[in-house]
Image 1: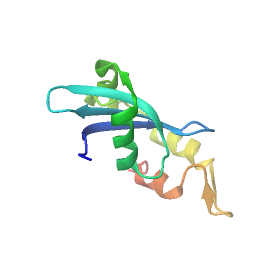
Image 2 (image 1 turned 180 degrees about the vertical axis):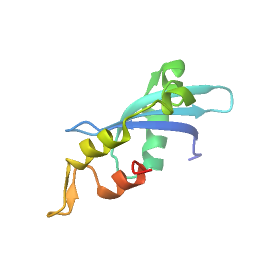
Image 3 (image 1 turned 180 degrees about the horizontal axis):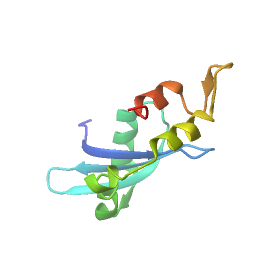
Image 4 (image 1 turned 90 degrees about the vertical axis):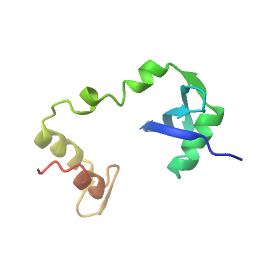
Length: 109
């Protein structure tokens, strides 16, 4: 089956239950947005699944997640790192938020 052209996606992970994703697609005629549940194991598969079986979602609202001014808002990096680090246990070496994810945010820069 032909893959759908995914332009962008955003993910929300509730404390319990499957991840929720919003995808923006280009079907060759127009851009559309869909929302749905995902297994959370493979982003490409999850995006395709939501694009094919997800509910329609307002495109303008979906694009709001990706506008430059939304993504570049000012945050207190030190405070964010402190909050995320609360979920990491050095002794156990695991967390709800992985240390590699915290490090990847570049909050020390």
